[in-house]
Image (cartoon, rainbow, N blue to C red; front, side, top):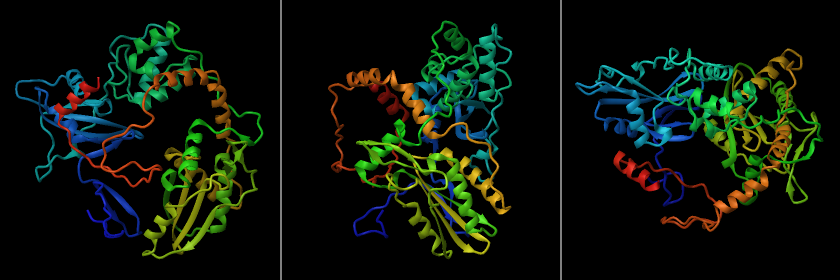
Amino acid sequence: MADPFGPAGERMYRTGDLARWNEYGEIVFEGRADQQVKLRGFRIELGEIETALLAHESVAQAAVVVREDRPGDKRLVAYVVPAPGTRVDTEALHRHGTDRLAAYMVPSAFVALAALPLTANGKLDRRALPQPVARGEGDGRAPRNPVEEVLCGLFADALGEPAVSLDDDFFRLGGHSLLATRLVGRVRTALATELSLRDFFLHPTVAGLARLITAGAGGAPRPALTASDRSDDHLPLTAAQRRLWFLDQMEGPSATYTIPFAVHLTGAVDPDVLRQALADVIGRHEVLRTSYPVVGDEPRQHIADPGRFTVPLTVAAVTEDELPARLAEEAGHLFDLAADLPLHAVLLELAPTRSVLVLVLHHIASDGWSNTPLMRDLGAAYTARVQGAAPAWEPLPAQYADYSLWQRELLADQEESQLAHWRQALDRLPAEVTLPTGRPRPVVASYRGATHTVHCPAETHQALSTLAG
């Protein structure tokens, strides 16, 4: 559609998101105009999964939803009504879905219903769909040795199941790559053995993993991450930080790699106390007072001494009408990685007892998960400072700079072999994949692209998957 806010000829693209302005000038996400969801980084059309399930001879009706029955554990659940004269075989449906859908689109659980619940208007009542029952087969084969016993306990705890038997499949019980990654760490701690994520996919049962560990296939555990004896100047960057630093050098400062978020605050907020609390949090987390200058042609971490930095807090009074534009302006804040702290804070005062705290962090120092501990520490520090005291929290066992040194030591022996492997794997491939697009690719990314959703029939998807091998 034509962009009414930009120059003539500019276009806007409908995202499919439904949202509204609330009375505080904030945008509240209300869902999707279609059935598209985002799960573990993938955009998924629920209708495509339902279509694939309806292609099975035993399914008369199907509905797929994303459920979060345990905090932080979102998963796809399919509800099916069997065709007349048939019964639903969940194992067969899982194989059917695996054959026709990408792995991240296969439901974690299947629930057979006599009929799908409907609203008074005759539409599917998704809120009335029942929670899947526990899926573990606790009455199956029991563990026979200490390794199997430990693994059964770890599986059950990670999956939220009352019991898990030797032959229960981790992924059929609702496991996914994120849970498997956490379980790798749990196995490392409990059994002093190093398994890879690939091991879980190839051996997704307790019996299979136990055989792998008993046979000695697991490697020696990684060294523990602890606080290191180090100077706080000119430290190496982690691999992830080097990637973000490189992009910043190539493209220049950009809001593409920043994480902005706003918190609506009720009650009087004292800016001076807030500034003290921010100083406490920045002092506690070294990564928030780290800049990335170039030293000898290499980017390095420079950690400012506690108390020797300027708290990046701005205070401004705004009206309700001005708030949306000001939020957008602050969200576009740019960082000079060589000199700035990677945190930008603004307190927007709407009224004596109403304000909005805007925090913008560069991705080189934070990610989406980091917002929770950041706000927890900021709240604790503000509460303490209001009472005239410093926050009483335990010292952190390690800092991000310790992780960078730990990672460098861990990968030191593998770096050359990894480089050799990928040089050989990528040999003779083109440096750039040229796609037949209608516009030439710019030298530097403009980030002005958009997403256009196309519905692909299950048969076409299967043919493409077969062609891709």
